[in-house]
Image (tube, rainbow, N blue to C red; front, side, top):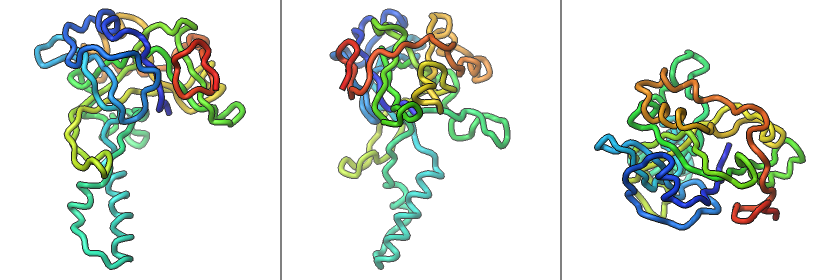
Length: 254
């Protein structure tokens, strides 16, 4: 699961390459580390049919089942304490930390599109997430869980994750309470080398050509674009840093 990436390229350059006509959030400095629930730029098709860049919060809505289970667990603890509560309100205010990565777009049981993700796989909710490098923890090589940073090459050129987005209303943090936000996440797929050596479970879906960017944003249905949820060929990515919590220096190492 990818829960850390960097976007060190100029924002205007990302908009230019992806042909985004407008920028709803204007400029911002390079981002050496983007973490879950942080704001980051995505490129999507706006209400006027033109591409735009906007800052969204990283973390799609969690499943209703996950929130229900968490609320029921909280309710059991309140019952044990003899505390009265309204379960409907408890469920509504259950913190939804968000889901950063979208892996299972197809249900293993039915072979059909996963019911949780289906509402956001259509053209209106697809986006491109610009990045220059991403990190995966070392789970499978030395097991240190230290970050290993990957990019298309050592110069960390601009690239795009295949993302989805949606308006969302939830509690992300108890201290902030109920919020109305725009959330995004990106798809993952099977790992290939060199990611597989360190994190064999999954890696982000990376779109590498203009044709792929265009298809992802304009394909009429999920059937037209689902082939893009695929691994890159072995060796496409390079290791560009190890151990660091951000990617702001060449071959960053902790």
